[in-house]
Amino acid sequence: MTCGTDYEAFGHKHPDVQIIGSFFGAGGFRQAHFPNQQTFDFEGLEGRLLSSSYAPEPGHPKHHPMLAALNAIFNEYETDGEVTFEYDTTVYYGKLTA
Image: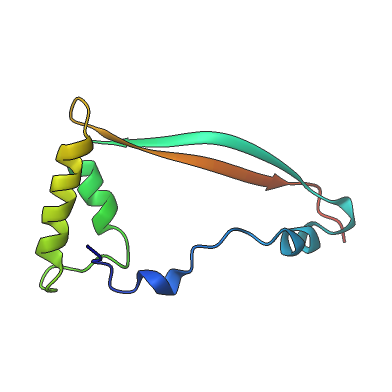
């Protein structure tokens, strides 16, 4: 079920290493990778979803079906009343040069 109103417009892409390199300049840059996670109870998960700009707002025909689907997904995957989002975080760092 797709509920987002304009999710495709966000174009979630990986960063372009050439653009990052040009930002840092001659000093170059390094990368570090960190595991990261967010854990939610249902109320937190619902809040996370509803804070997304592409989530249909109350009154939109997809709003109630979206919340029903979220509830079903939560009930299927929860452990002890919580679900966890797991992320891989990449940090780009270096000394900026003129």
